[in-house]
Amino acid sequence: MVDFFRRALRKLDKLNAEQRRELLVSAVSEISLLENVLDSIDMGILVCDEADNLIMVNKCAQRLIPMNYIEGVKLRFAITNESIVEAFGDIIKNREKVIDKEIDVYNQGRNRLLSVNVVPLVQDKRITGTLIYIEDITEKRKGEARLRRAETLASLTTLAAGVAHEIKNPLGSISIHLQLLQKALAKKIKTCNSVLENKEEYVQNENVNEKDTGSSTDKYFDVLKEEIDRLNRIVVDFLFAVRPMNLELREGNLNYLISHIVEFIHFEMEQSGIKCNLELDETLPKILFDERYMKQALLNLIKNAQAAMSGGGELSISTNYADNEIRISISDTGSGIKKEFLSKIFEPYFTTRETGTGLGLTQVYKIIREHHGEISVDSSSDEETGAHGTEFKISLPIPQKETRMLSYERDSFNLGEKI
Image 1 (tube, rainbow, N blue to C red):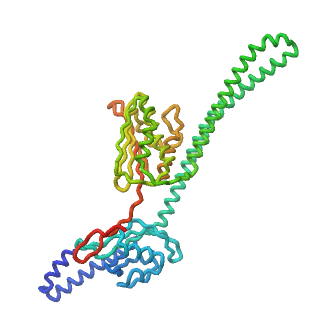
Image 2: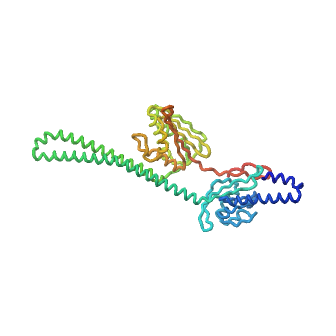
Image 3: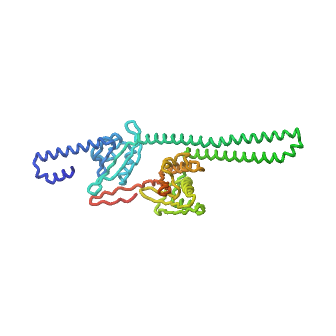
C-alpha cells in the first residue's frame, strides 16, 4: 500500500480534485487502520525521532507507563516516573540496543514488572529514531514461579518416595542382623552360665565356642556398619538433591577445568582401555561458575561414560562457543541407553546399573540448572544396526553484553563505539 501512495504522489499534479480527495480518504483510512492495529496490540509501543521526541504512543503503553503524552514532546518530559525516565534516558542517550530489560513500575495502584526492548528505527538504511516496545510480564513471572514450585513439589515427592524405598532395604538388613546378633550373644551368655554347673567342661569347650561366636558377631557387626554407611550415603545424597546450592561463582575458563579433569583420570582411562579425545574451542570466553560443583557434574558424566564402556572404547569431550552460549559435549561409544529410558534418566533414583544410586544424573541436572544452563542426552542402543553410544550436551548462557545501536548520521550510517 505504501508503494501505491508513493506512485500516486509522483503523479499528484496530474490528478483532478476528485482523485486527490479519494487519495486523501484512502490515506486517512490506512492510517486509521494502522492506529487501530497498534492500539489493539497487548504491548506498549513508543516511537521517537532522532531528537528523542515522541511521535507515536499506543494505548497499551499509556496504560503500562505513567505518562502525559503530547505528540512531539521529549520522551523524558512525557514520562512521569523518574526511574523509568532515568532508565530510558541512559538507553537512548548511549544509543544502546536493549533486549528484555526488566524494570519495576508502580502505576495505577499496582506494582508491575515490565520487559523493555529498545531497537533502532531504520528507514532507507539510516537510523531515523528509536522504537521502544514494552510488555507486562508480571503474571508471566508469577506463573513461572508457580510452575517452579509445582515442579519442585513433584520432584520432592518422587525423591521422598525413592528415599523411603532405598532406606527400607538397609533397615530390613539391619533388623535381621540385629536378631542374629541377639541370638549369638544369647548363646554366649547361656554358655557362660554353664560354668556354674561344670567349670571343667566349660573350660574344655570354651576355645571352640569363643572362636565360633566371635567370628559370627564380627560378621554381623561388619554388616551393620556397612548398612549404616549406606543409610548415611542415602541421606547425604537426599539432602544434596533438596537443599538449595550455595554457589561460589568465580570467573574462569571451562577448558582449563576440563583439561584438569582429563589429566586426573588419564591413567584410570588407559587401564580401562578407553581412549580420550579432546576438542576444546580456543575462543571460549571466561564465564562465572562454581568450580567445585561444575567439576562434580562433569566428572559424574565422565564416570558414567566409563561405566558404559566396560570393554574399552572412546570418550570424546568438546567445547564450542556460539550464539552467546558455551556448549559442552561428552560422548562415548558404550552400550547406550534404551529409548524408553531416555526421558527418565534425570529422575531421582532411576538407574539401569545394579550398583548405581540413581542420584548421580539428578545431581548433574541440578548443578547445570543452578548455573542457568540446560542439559540434554542423545543415545542409541540398537542391537540390529549395532549403533551404540551416548552423548550429553550442556549449554551454559553467557550474559549478553550491551551493544550500541547504529549511530545516526544524515548522509551515512555506521556502528557506534562500544561504551
